[in-house]
Length: 150
Image (cartoon, rainbow, N blue to C red; front, top):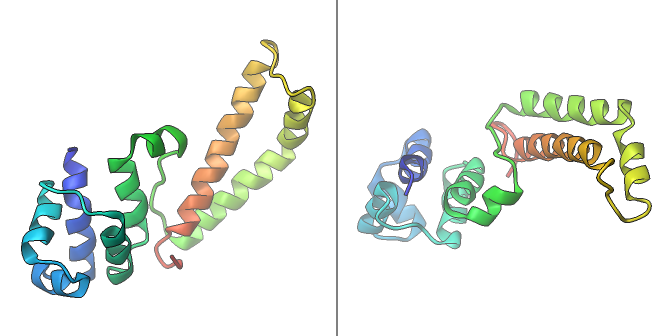
């Protein structure tokens, strides 16, 4: 298991100011389980991670957990940095406006209208996909932003 995975739960707990004992009590788990999660001996199940995110006021923990434990997630979803709500919101707006200003939406529709991406269209299609990945990344950054709601 990657080093970061062993520490994401510990970092979120410490950021909230909880001891292992107080966090374990709030989560309804044993201190031994808490230690196992924080040292990488065990991976917490989804329900525990959701509860950690709520109790620690750390919605970003959900994404970090998925990034570290799920290959499929990493293959589909771009890595999401953690920003302030203001920065994440302005990044999202700027990417959406740039996409619209470049008329990428119209270019995408022209490419897709025959339901085939031809070899000639492939480079532009991939460029549009990259732009969309940046928009998705920025939207998810808003969702998990410091100061935002879960």
